[in-house]
Length: 343
Image 1: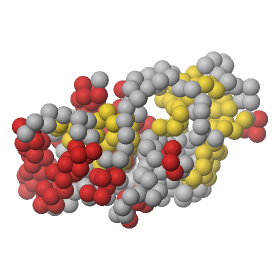
Image 2: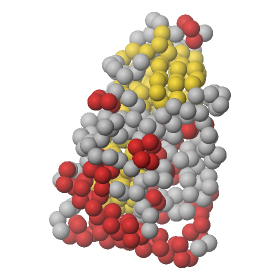
Image 3: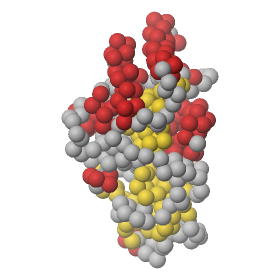
Image 4: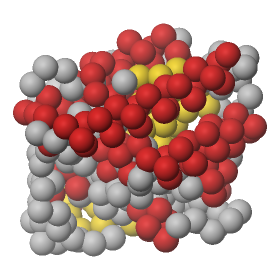
């Protein structure tokens, strides 16, 4: 039946593409510029082609919707479902939208065509399609009924974006589907565009990455959640104040929220490791306190060890990366913090 659909490329109105700060210039689904002003670390440059946080938004009265997707490669992660790594998922309705379906396909393939809904009535619906978290998307088309009307998505609550820099956890490892990454959950709840700049194993706080991120315009808040990849404590002590300085030089008044790393399962069994984690947390908090005392009031800190709550060891796939429960708890904890900052 998909041959009866009309296929749309969602890169121009009335479709709205979110989560790709440089798309207007580079015209590809990528999270950092194709030609940055200075060389980026190789791993970061490669991971920037993973489409975590990308969204396609529009309204349609089509009773049917499918996607055709050409990926940069096949699924291959041992601790993350292909639906999260390589799939699109679909949300409908006014903010906060409700989940409907996920693209399920032959994970050995690097391209697929999947129906995401066939509904009984033709009525105008607000649609969000979330991009894969851990794979590049070379092409995507949205299939709708030929007679269906397509309208722009309702406006965001703000024209400013929340920019989140961090680790594999920020990128979405290991959510079962894209909409469960905590940045996507928060985007739905706050009705604000999020730019997900999580780089798996590679959120190391390099100054060249900070300067590239600082190019982003219309920022409501920067969120720094990279401690888990920052290396030895001495390295964090070097990169963290410089990252803040670089962002603040380009954005003098934009709020910056810092999140220390979430609790890992092994913290309960390794006292020395836990003490080092506390040391690192306190360094970040104390650095922000000192800067606030010097006059920068737009700095905020969140103790990441509190985000997963009681029973945190049941909130991960492998002791580190959240499962869907873990991501939902992260979003539940961060929502009131970010709502107060952004609104």
